[in-house]
Image (cartoon, rainbow, N blue to C red):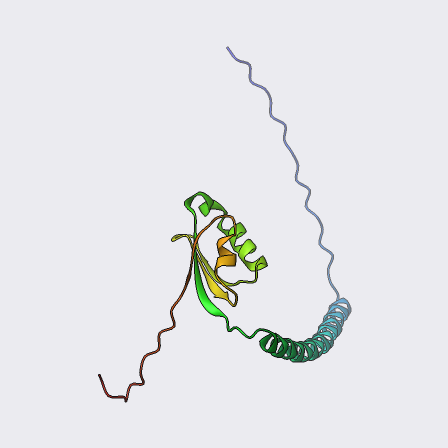
Length: 151
C-alpha cells in the first residue's frame, strides 16, 4: 500500500497597493500630457523631414530616368522567361541572376515556372543564364478604338 505524502500549503502573500493621492494623480496626468505634446512635436518635424527627403528623391529619380532614357536607344520590350524543371525550386535565384543581367522582373510565377518582365537588349543574353529553358518576347497587341468601324 502506497503511503500518502502530506501536501504543503503555500501561502500567497497579498501585496498592498499604495493609495494614490489626488496630488500624485495630477502629477501623472501632467507628465502624460507633456510626453504626448513632445511626441506630437517630434512627429511633425519627422514628417516634414520625410516630405523634404521624398521631394529631393523624386527629383533625383526623374533626372536618373531621363539619363537612362537618353542612353538606351532600344526600348524595353516585355519578355517571358521559362525556367527549366530542374531549377523550379530555385526560381528566386534564377530571377536574381536575370536582374543582374539587366532584366526588370515584374513577377515570378512559381506555379507555371515563368518569370515575366522587360528587357532592352537581345533575348539571347538571357538564354545564357543557368536554369533558363526559353526566352520569348511578348508581342504588343493594340486594339482599335471603340468608335472605329469594324473590318
